[in-house]
Amino acid sequence: MAGILVYALHSDEGEFNNNSLGAISEAAKLAGEVGGDAAALVVGDVDDATAAGLGKYGAAKVYRASSAPEGLAQPIVDAMAKVITDEGFSYALFGGGLLGFEIGAGLTARLGAGVTMEVTAVKADGGKLIAERPVLQDSAIVDVGYVSEPGIIIGRLNAFDAQESGGGDAEVVDVDVELSEWSTKATMVTRGESGDEGGVNIEDADILVGAGRGLGGPENLNVAEELAGALGGAVASTRAIVDAGWTPYATQIGQTGKTVAPKLYLAAGISGAIQHKVGMQSSENILAVNKDPNAPVFEFADLGVVGDLHKILPKLTEAIKAKKGG
Ligand SMILES: Cc1cc2nc3c(=O)[nH]c(=O)nc-3n(C[C@H](O)[C@H](O)[C@H](O)COP(=O)(O)OP(=O)(O)OC[C@H]3O[C@@H](n4cnc5c(N)ncnc54)[C@H](O)[C@@H]3O)c2cc1C
Image (cartoon, rainbow, N blue to C red):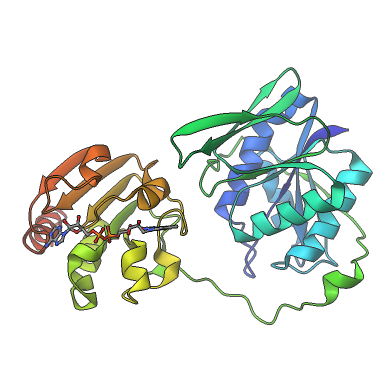
């Protein structure tokens, strides 16, 4: 059976990761074009109803490998490799994120497959999938096809939207996976989330206030935090302020940080270096506040305000609070 297999990451509370749900939705849209179904693989402790619920996003079947622990790449490589080989899947699709990259790379080596990383879109042509991948610091997109099966496709974070397809429960199939000897060398001690600012994960936030060196120092971060709080969003960072120790790495946007695509990205005191731009340029609306009218950020901002952020941001925060009724 040809088809697309997606690895669906879940938290200890049984909630599926949004990028995984996006990958299942994407697979469901494309599976018919390659003559098969979209299916998901879950590992660890997932109850029947939770696993079957992935049908809502378009998974026809959910393979459950309970012997593989969640969160460690190698056991999941074992499980993905077994299901792909036994069931004859043509493609494996990952939603992105560090674990997806690690599993995807391991799976590629294990199966001698072809892999495309940082994929932002997937299309079908002549019964085969083509992955679209930005290159040259996102200034061009290349189409990547596969000369053999399976093809491994690893999405960029937030590349695929999680959409309910209107489907019912997926069929849940338990698979026995014998873990490789090396896969059991590492054990999971504890799992936790980082990157939650004020309870909002920056990758999921609809509104981000990007904080840059123009804030002047860590003591001024509250200016950005208060604005983000008034907007119901979160604070993201440039590498300059992460390297300076003002904010944690989990909030860094850019080439060596996270990729985000919120509805609004408000860049405050950010110059707009290419390495930052590649992480936020897909935002729906980009608003920049910078005192330098020649700052590169104004070249790609939808709306630019030239001025001192210390004057503008507090006024904006007050205005938003007033509009929201205090
Ligand atoms: C290999 C490599 C990877 C990198 N990866 C990343 C990455 O992932 N993410 C990333 O962000 N960077 C990355 N960088 C660094 C990047 O090149 C820039 O140095 C960085 O993004 C600059 O951060 P910034 O905009 O906060 O600071 P700056 O470039 O110093 O800009 C500060 C801006 O604030 C403005 N400003 C100052 N005071 C005020 C004020 N009172 N009001 C309003 N505006 C004010 C200034 O006009 C200026 O434009 C990378 C660099 C390299 C070489």
